[in-house]
Length: 168
Image (cartoon, helix red, strand yellow):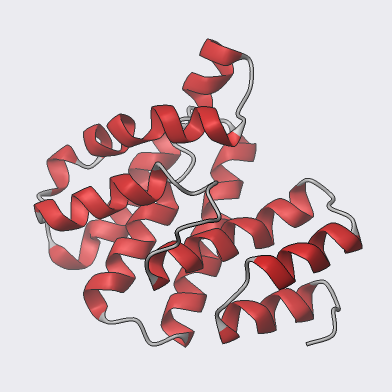
């Protein structure tokens, strides 16, 4: 697979994966856009940026399975079911094993806010929250709490503060 097309191929494959679920499609596209933006603003190196983007595209890959299997897309279910689905999804992409392992790890931990071990992980949490706060209509106190407890990157904080009109 051509190097420069990995991202667009992953986006296209994920759109087809969701079989017309516009909510799921729009959600991952928004998370990917925020992750890409924050990663670029934080000056991630090329490999880490690609890892982040590929993980953000499929971060909720387990949602359809979780809906049918558990009747819920709770984070614990997504994390449990997401890693093997992520590995299978990217099988044809000829990714370096280390990158594939990291993507699977990120998918399997994107609702865990402790033990964050890299900027790719941090940015994925921030990007997902930026979207979830709007989609789930989080209250101002919930957003402010998350701002204090979880947000760490300068770029993510600037976006959060601007979008939700918080004090920096």
